[in-house]
Image (tube, rainbow, N blue to C red; front, side):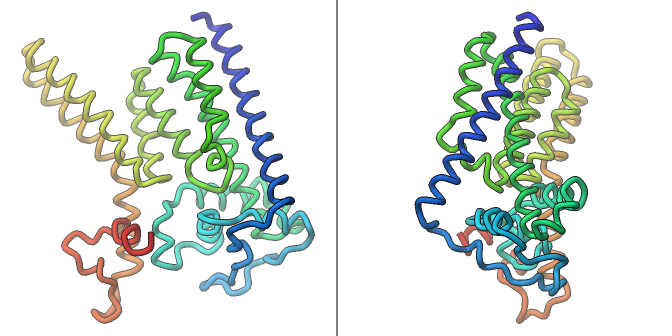
Length: 300
């Protein structure tokens, strides 16, 4: 595959991914104008517990209202966490990567818009920007990874087009964590296939900051480690090399698990420590106090 063909295909993918986002935005605006939303949670927006008077919080104009009215379903949680932090137990079902990106963007690049549209509208706008930009980059990595696996640039191009226009595409443009997860998981697999294992570890570890199933990506390194260790031990007859491979692979897997585990530790520290036995939640007293499992079974 020539470099020119690859660049042309990636440019085409970026254009089609952008077109798919604009088409989806147009359809969303059209349907919201024609039909009443099923979920009306966008209007439920009490002040933060720690900061009862957020700066420039109110809606200032019709554009602000339109942006905020799109904050529904899980988007409510992500925007709320970006604005107020983790206040309630159920909010810990949503991992921190997307709220952190929203907060960072709203306090830097989009900060001047706060005085125009209001703080919450800018938070929501930041969420849309993060999700859609992440999707564009994920589409490019998807194409690169497809080329490596399929060994056919044209088939990879068709697969990438289907990715851009897939039926679940709405989740990649909403304030959901799917786009960030796709970016870092697919990007991590691309670097893993390219032999850049350290970059792959970083990407896959970041993916576990976006969604809990990011920890499953450690399985790729488990497979790679077992394959290399078998080759070193039984083919090359080098036991010391096999041991090195096993230790290195285990450390890489641990790195992918660390962000999710650290988040569970933070939840335990925030919700359990310093509480009387009567105030402690049931999961706090478990042998392995795993907050995420309890939240999923209790609230969802």
